[in-house]
Length: 246
Ligand code: UDP
Image 1 (cartoon, rainbow, N blue to C red):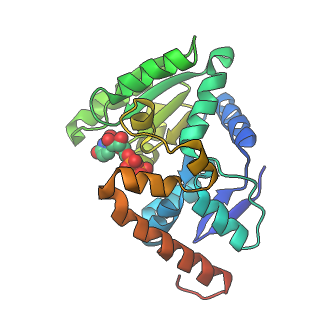
Image 2: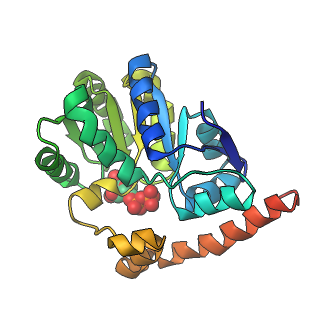
């Protein structure tokens, strides 16, 4: 078991990418409808005022440190956080080992057609991979029973849900026991990136921990979300100096 580091009330696992992949593999064999979350700064900040999200994250079986902000926060609090485990990268690592381990995926979420494009991309990148179902992420409550049975009947090992935060976490938590998929992971904009709709930052920017800046430049509508970062830094600092009510 890895150490869980509490950041703004949410326990984040101090794992490397290799350890995260191994944990997911173990969760698959346990077959108990596990939840994996990828916690970036924005999600951790949201959890400070969304108690349902906070409860779900703390009940998750694995919470990986997604993003430079989360790694920075743990280290600022004096804890050891080995590296960033971005959700989009975790998905690629799992897909890489999938053909050899016979791990089957269901892709749920994003606009119509996007999950299918992501499926094709995965099949090109990882020959032999089994993507056993796709479903777009725009639906009405009355469509849910059909979606649930589609996912359940697919008998996938991993459900990737890309509905955005916190919708995906809440949806998965609500229905995980019904869908009976061994591991469910909320993956945000990952299908858009795989389908080529949204570009990933160049490697040098990822290495310089500037992926967030790249995303804001490309999608100015998201720029407002950057305001979350200084707020996050401030709250983590307050946690460090022991002020209550951060
Ligand atoms: N999305 C969806 N259903 C919804 C709302 C959003 O499938 O009702 C999808 C959206 O098309 C996009 C993803 O969820 O593919 C959210 O991407 P974003 O990068 O905003 O993720 P976040 O930053 O919230 O993790």
